[in-house]
Length: 302
Image (cartoon, rainbow, N blue to C red; front, top):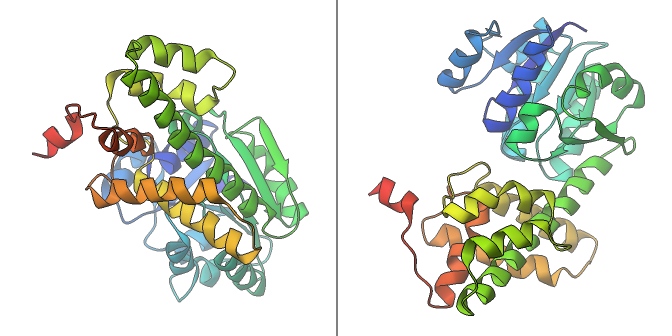
């Protein structure tokens, strides 16, 4: 399996695709963003005109796209992956999407003779670039075994979770915790801020104490500098939180903390900050408490 296809070259996809190139695989790409294509073409990747052409040309197709609607769009129709895939080929989707769309895509790929793997990852764009993501996979076990050498490029921690959409569910479980964690972190920071604790010292301690996490440690400078340039946006986190709520409704699971956190992400979008990093949920929490700081991102827009 030397010919790898990649659909979707955003922040995560680009970093992961670059690792494939660095490992001396032949990389073929499809994306509507020509700038992203140009960047990787300079490193030796080749672009193709459609998802179907990508599937015909390569052994394995990966996709990192924003949502289930786009996953369906790149799979279906004459120009979709299902039209180009054939016996023995594998389609691996790394995106965070709803379980129902994922299952539908799996059926389409199976009917075309290919195999579909659900392969969401957990980690930042930095971890995507250095190969330290947590990788969760479900779908056909033999297909998983075949693509394992490629998955090893993305993360040493890999988990095969079952034959259907177990990995999708696991990613949503993680995202529910991520969203709620940064709401909790915002509340803690504001409590200390209002009580007069030094901002930078507080952030240092919270990144090293028992309540910390990898995500909080990765965002120390972001919070110290109050620079919420996006690595993963509020829009993306809100999409994931809504998927969590949909899944919880399906199984009649009460998720009050997730529900409340989701409303604060909604408030970020409502105040024009959907393209900020999702950690910027701090800002609407501060405003609720009468705290106002200069907003470097808003100044750039103005």
